[in-house]
Image 1 (cartoon, one colour):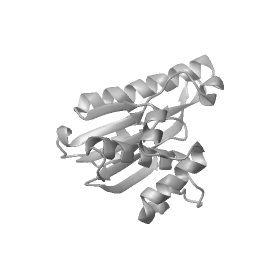
Image 2 (cartoon, rainbow, N blue to C red):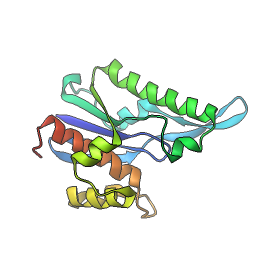
Image 3 (cartoon, rainbow, N blue to C red):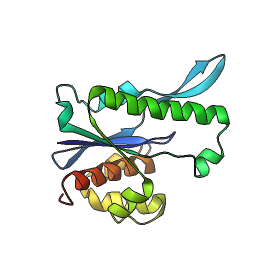
Image 4 (cartoon, rainbow, N blue to C red):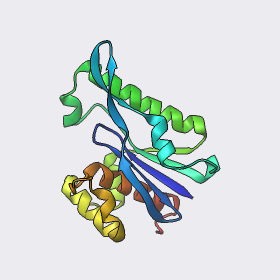
Length: 171
């Protein structure tokens, strides 16, 4: 069984657990594109799944857990209405792509996955938990310059939560 965890957002990431092992963790493919003469951020949904290397996998063998989004939190408060609309459209495109491929899909609220894996609060706590859960994979939570990527840690922990959920608490 393949479990995919996705932490959506500008600093988001995706992770893949296959047969109980974290095998992929990377930033979401987001880049600036010109729209109406202005630079806008765009998430390339199809590229996520190309990087996950799911070709040839039976859709019934893939389940995706995405952090549920709602209009709350500091990130959304700082966004313009137009930026929020673009973000939610990309979120919907992501969900549509997954459903269109026939993969299993669960939207999971942050509080649910955080409590479900007993992670300490805050981004730093999530990084610490990711290091504990995946001790041999800590390099996956760092960028090219060695900086810690909390989005990657969150995506891996969402996938870990998904793995536990699917396997009834057994890892």
